[in-house]
Image (spheres, rainbow, N blue to C red):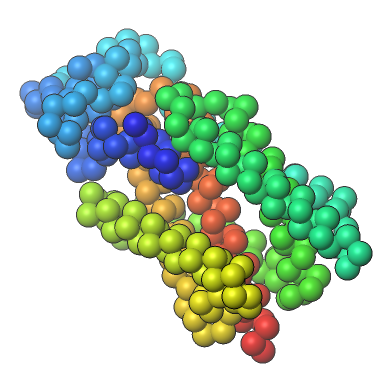
Length: 301
């Protein structure tokens, strides 16, 4: 079974397969045929006590022992595939966000309606993300539909924040998200960030704890009113906003590791949709945390 967390919804992070890419060695002549290329035929995953990799039958994977292609590699994932699919998903998010901002008024008389549409779109996006997470193969239609509904939610929430809480904060949040993406990508390419099993475990535990605290804060806010446990305002809100952005940056590193391993070990081209999905979910996370953090900072001025 694959992870139910949409951020980690990929074969690399499936519960039954472990993470085949961690500490994987590059194919070398005369090297072992098992436990090197996680996408090669018959390759066993060294982290699952002999369990076979989900791409064990990939006819396009490199031969793990000889380091040579088994046949013409015309159906494998490339960086261009990942870039183009990610551009499609993020473009869909941006387009629907802009349209919802323009078409859904946020004046006091229609604020409730706008909130309802935004929350409804967020719930639909969550359901679609979970559906994709449990599918064995990526579905471009589901991923693009998720991006569309997520964009509606982002457009509504951004419009409300810009109109009633912190004017001008949305462009700052967008630039901040782009800066985090560029910074993590640079650090990853320079090998300042090394994604290991320990790193993955730490990030997973931290993300789960963070999400549980946010859910608890929401429940207290609904029951007792106000800001619940205080995680959304003041000094505590700033602290958790910074933590949220840092966790998003860590998740980005995991996304980059997925892309790198998929390209190195000959993942099927369809897996580029999974990579695009993961990157989109992570960037949405970072944007929302950046928007909340900047709103608090601007409100405290």
